Length: 566
Image 1 (spheres, one colour):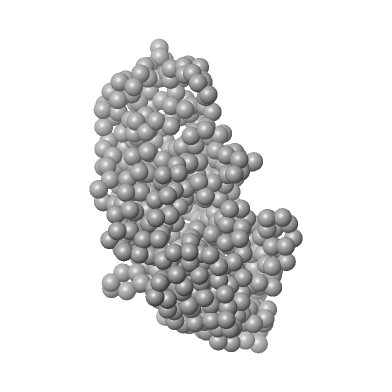
Image 2 (cartoon, rainbow, N blue to C red):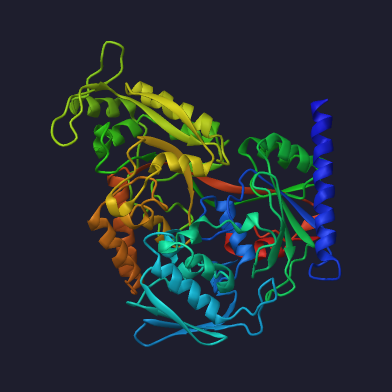
């Protein structure tokens, strides 16, 4: 009875999507005639506002809906950069001014001209409010002073110093329509309305990429319709319908029944079954996603300050069986990882650690540090004095876990809990809700970097990061400038922050590599994270379709525009 009801609901949803597509496409020939590309996912779009999001699925949606100056491509030699809205670019002799030639006669989805002025305004506004409302996107504009638009198709970005990874940074920058966002910037002090705006709640909102958005459901189906104004290769599909599943088993069942055409990331426990399913094909590529234990590293945290000691964190981490996590949680489709930037980056430092599974050695270290076991086997942290004095207390800690991971975080937590128990430490899982709710628990409701307020209400979390080819963004998330925006550790280390600024302005790539490696080692040595695994990226699709560019993932509009029916 339940299964029948589920199927009827799905068929109703597909019919509704088809109606939306038919209505939106009437009188146009924007799509390529391949029908609706139906995509299943276990991650959702939490926002279409580039100034305020947390889910990786949102980043993918931005790429599809907004203009970028450049985007990634992928070939035999790996990742490269190609133009998106920009057709060409050049730099001044001193390396401080970058000029981009934009494609002419481009328009926003509402028909208004899309010009270099939109890009210049977006850049200048992002830089203006970089310490507040626009901090989420500001990392892509590090060291930018301003931008100007000499004419509608010429954009000039002015940097304070030469930057060694300009194009990689700008791949993560999205241009928003000035005529929509400028009134928001002026609406509240500090441009706060830029961050609180939810375009997806006011359809149709103005887009300027390969697609417009005709239907949005945060935890349902979002429909992308090809935009006839798009300057690049048009979508082969008449629409892309992305459906969020809370139950991955239902998603896989729908793929097998032919109710989905593509699952953008296959649950690891379903890989073997799908590999033997007729009419379904799999792609397996190096993944960008890593999982970790996140440690609250705010130097001003008032409680359980023993967890600020890297030696304590390392000792506990030595009791975590990562090999078991790989086999049980990821069915073997993962590998151990030491660096936050992950295997996706060519600048990953290969000389970190490694963190070996040796709980006996971890226990010896805890004994040496003075954390004796109580009568019940739980270790006890001694009393401390000084500014953050705390009485003697058992080593019991809560671990925040979000509900929006694309892997079995509950089972991963159980394995970590088992390991910590062998070290005499008791962990309790604290389900934090979706990503937004969980992050709010980490930062606190009154997070304020300028006042050093935040990151006091938690000790640990277990989460994941989806990295980028260039490691700049991943290295930025532990800087003080990302407090209340991307930082999930609350770390505040001025010396590290200076290195972050230095790597960005180091043009010589060998010198930059040395700095980037040094920064990764600092993160590892301080155990801001206990890195667990680097996932393999696996998608599955119907053999009735072709052209899936799995390697590109959320790095190019072609990820959605290229698939077509056989």
